[in-house]
Image 1: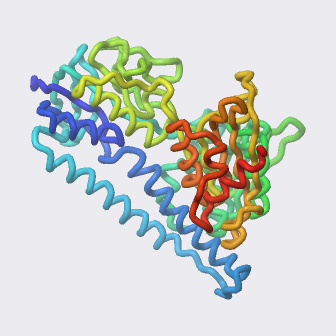
Image 2 (image 1 turned 30 degrees about the vertical axis):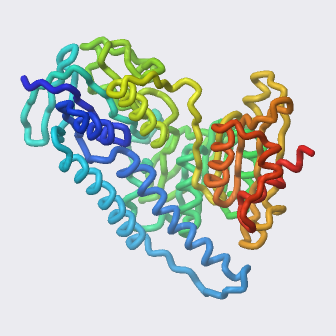
Image 3 (image 1 turned 180 degrees about the vertical axis):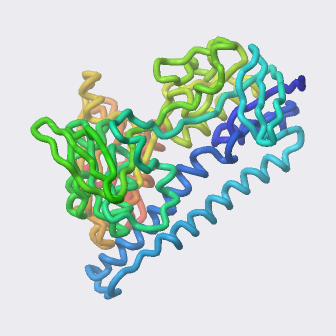
Length: 459
């Protein structure tokens, strides 16, 4: 049995930087990866999806260029070239992460799947068929999540798509049905509609983007429907089958049932933690009913010396949160800090067009908490930069405390919403009140400049 100071299971966006920093701090470290270095973000998530979305955006802009006085003619989409570009970027990012591991002294990369075989002991089934046994003082679980697959009649008899397998399509679907009206599903839905697919989105609840305010959901619904997407809410799938290479998808709503014919079905109802193969019962690591590992504010499990970082711990499932998990754990263990996840900011962005940038409390959340608050809101049709560039869809909205004048949260549905949201996030982190932004000097003409105008709505 080989002993390490630290073993990280999973080479994702928390695991890789943590492994490197621990090794650089003099800890004998191993990182175990059963698939590909880089985790979901590089291989199946942020990197590949955003390259595809960029291509879809270019196709849309080309088609809309006539409104700006630029005549382009017909637009042709080559999905094979789009995939090739995506693959090259993914390979580049993954190779960069691997080189970082290989160039770090005191750090071993082990290709294989890990399971607990003792309280601080792991058995690794390597890709070459070996069974290796390691022990460590610290064990960090960074195994992430995978697409959640529902139990649907007939689903296992067809070749359905997930957010991973759809990335490898080389032909544009004739009719893509997307099960799930939230962030992942909507990004793919809009992208493939812009590539030329007919797209139908199915959502079981009464609105898409269920975590967002009603005005955000309804505005995004209108934007997508105006582009040509079909959105069916309060709708579920009863059964799916394939006849003569055509999918027959039987839908059920509160009022009726009907059958939709489609070429492809994308399952995008969320993700589930990759913990079932870890044998967590051996060390006694506790999980919730969905399999997410329970951790405290320092990301330690109920077993001392065993930590869980990233999507696997059930926290907000974002790359930047996984990375922040790593910084918390490293600074606490090596720099003897007292950092925690308590009260940390959780910004996020949905990369539809327009984007949705979110930080802090939504209007609904502020109401639920019984807070005294005001809402500042401005449509992008009143934003100079939006008018000049032809990007007038959506709105900016901020929730503020009228007494302290602090910003409690923001929902930005706009072009470059993530960048605008980041300005408000910095203000919230620094305690800058909305009146300071209202009278602040921003470069003209920028999108963020209209934060002046947003907070004028409170005058």
